[in-house]
Figure 1 (cartoon, helix red, strand yellow):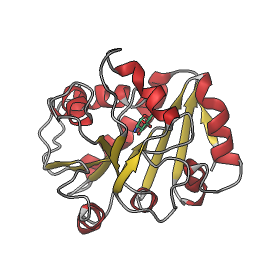
Figure 2: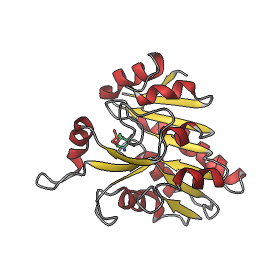
Figure 3: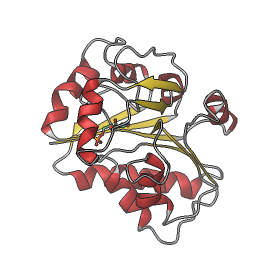
Figure 4: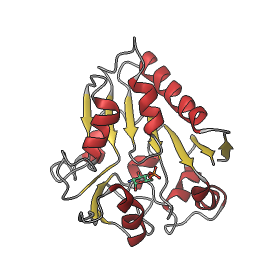
Amino acid sequence: MEIKTFSNYKQICNVVSSNIRDLVLHNNNPVLGLATGSTPIGVYKNLASMRGISFENTITFNLDEYRGLNHNHRQSYHYFMKKHLFQYHRFSKNYFPGQSNLHKYDTMIKNTGGIDIQILGIGTNGHIAFNEPGSSRYSATRIVDLTDNTINDNSRFFDPLEPIPTQAFTMGLSSILDAKKIYLMAVGKHKEKILEEAVYGDIYEGLPASYLQQHPNCEVLYCD
Ligand code: GLP
């Protein structure tokens, strides 16, 4: 695994969206693993504007969702996905981890044949999805406590007086690492250090993204 550095964000988004496009055009039942956060928004913008391509056979599994946030809340990941992608194309199914499917989520993914392309961002503490430092490489989809670092990072999206969720539902590292292809996207100087540690440093629980080094087909795309 190595870091591929690009000169701008648009180029990274084009790489990821064109590979998703090829998958959807050439596969009868494509399965996508989708991330939220600011990083993948440009990918969804590209997909949203694609004409002449049908997502009607495509199943999506989102990585995570806040616990205790109404799905209509503008900071919920349900709302995010609808706003950036799902309102533009009809999909076969759009799944999110939640209370009702928590113990089935990993099996549901396996039953589709597995995730063909997984999009990932990275938290400034090295988390992927909401697998915070300390997460086992074999972790299943579950409820997690968010670290102060993550709550602080994500507080910028909430109104100052609004309570910020402290727990989330997250796909575990096990299902993420089972994806056939992974694109880890990172944008901005503030991500550079943690990305270098994840890609070139030790593999251990304290830095969940470092487990991606064990994946046979993970591309890391970075621009500052
Ligand atoms: C949240 C999400 C992660 C995402 C991270 C980075 O914590 N749960 O999946 O990777 O934010 O967000 P951003 O892309 O805004 O830097």
